[in-house]
Image (cartoon, rainbow, N blue to C red):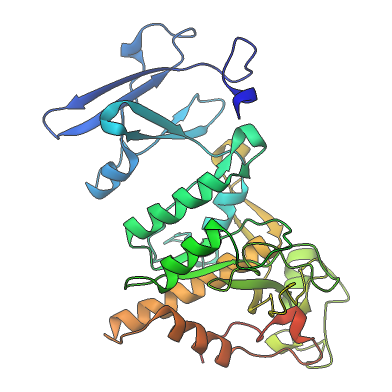
Length: 353
């Protein structure tokens, strides 16, 4: 990270940041401007607030802005240490926006553009570092879990991961256990199983190697093959007819979906969910949506489904614990006939059961 510190050789523009406390709202205000391009700060009309505080206060205009009409790069601000540190937050790729769209995109005029749980409230916690090619860091992961706990998040999705030999070890695994099984209310934590299949024991960390998480494999069925890829010979297995496009158990696992078991003998893959989707991506791409596939897509599909389940439980006043929900998910999943358990886990997630 020190090698990527800003310098006169930096490609990105150096921004001037002005911070002050608004006495009328008792809130931080931030202006970020490229002073070299436009030295008159009065012409930079976008005034930001601390994103979390602005969201809690119901503000809209101060939550985010964009850099330039040509770039369309969305920007928000976070203020730390009583104003001594200002963090300007922007996306470093389209992966996170796509994942969030699968979970909870909301399009009231077009149901086809909605995510699995369009009524959910998304808490966006960035762990990717643009200086590292969007790679996450251990400190970033740890801070993310702390923020999730403080925010009272009900369902977590992590569409990140790498190969690992050790299972259920290290600081992240410990923090995950405390988040899920610590002081009530615990959170339900889902993560991608990995995209290194189809060989055995290719599941990645932390989704398939941390016991507190549910590792989600990527499933594809005949309808998806036709609608997403235009395939004439859709994926099928002996459990369902190739012509029955509505039969969920007719599907198989994507070939790239990582397989268990984990190196400690655990299943690795807990459940499976659809691993391809057309969903929203950032504005700067000049595209409204994009097709992506991977266990990064199956995990948010499952997370959105679990969010719907928890919403129903809360509406009914029914008590639950993360472990009770996990047992229900595993016991009601629909097994895919002819597909090994190392590939699919307990089967296809079925919250309607």
